[in-house]
Length: 302
Image (tube, rainbow, N blue to C red; front, side, top):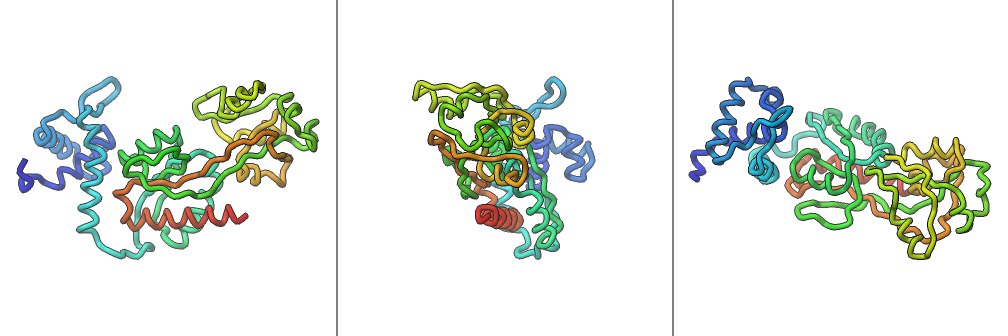
């Protein structure tokens, strides 16, 4: 392929087309006419020798080749932007959208503070909080450019994904004030009451159940919910018990909940902030990363 024959504007259009999988939405995003974007798609198909997008039920679908191009195309465009883009633009003058994939608990902990701090330092940044579907999906979103940042738990270190630890979580057994188990939560008492657990995938068993099984014990899981945010109100209304991350419990410690140390050793988890390596030099992403880290340092300090 003769590089001199490649129109870089074509790659920008292709990036939008592969993101949107829709000609009209890509045209709107790029502020171009639909015929111009359709023509660019045909040129891209010729350039790569593949349909890239094909008709499917309910709309257009990326071909395997189109899907495989998403991440490297974004890396190429980010590199070009780094070479040619203006340097040291005042943050006050920048208008950008930053997409953050995170579960409900980290979002509740930091979103209000993030908006307050950005309003002072970079008011033109619009934050989009995207739903969390597991760490694997978060990695894919960072690689494909569907998210700029992800707050999640990574059990491994994926290639090209950079991460920092925001805080180390531990667990607290939470219950309503006046619960019969309040003040004397031993192992037998803990297992005697029904538990509510949290799983975004609806899993009935958790690593805690595996720990109990290894000891020849089991507990009754009476309810599974998709988010930690649902748990406090449920505990206040019932005799259920729940393992809550300590920072989640701290948000309700002045309410109607009381906590106790788990009667068996329960592993905590590190909460990570992650981004793709291609964005390491991005001024806006770097600023938002620094701001989020500052917020979580404040949270960890109490």
